[in-house]
Length: 244
Image (cartoon, rainbow, N blue to C red; front, side, top):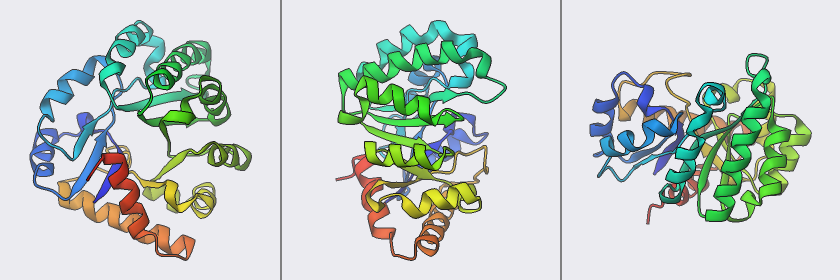
């Protein structure tokens, strides 16, 4: 089974239709969230659909206005295996809130390390080094699956992430950028995953449409790496989604 490890289901206009389609689909998603307040309601919507895993998220771009929700996040994390979207964003629009972001991310990284067995989808815009520092200090890499979503860090940061055992989710736009192509070529095959970041990259009419897009990403990966990785990527996806 192929899965989209970073899909904003709650932001899709056809959310309810997609949920029904996924219940009969051989494609899966991790429905990443952006605020802890939205988590339990989305879980209710997706209840009984085994190939949708709902992520407990706290997007770094929203922390300045919702900093008080960190306590709710830390309460919910005990019963949440899928964590995301989380991370840091030091782009010019959000750098003013760097300290608030760091404070919340440290707490999240520590909680994940304490709990263990989490799957994290991590935002790291202009902040990959800081994300790596916090995850390393907390010990999060040791007992969790840490996925860098749409990685855009430097070559040195990418090397650090690979050495730490990070996973990487690849979307179609990464196939077209120099930075993305360089990342795709050096990631260990057993750490390769897929994502679309929908609806920010593309809106999908249905589960079949998404499956075709994921297959297109796999084809692009194979062409760029010069090797057949379809089986390995499927194995990676099944491990993440806990398909037996």
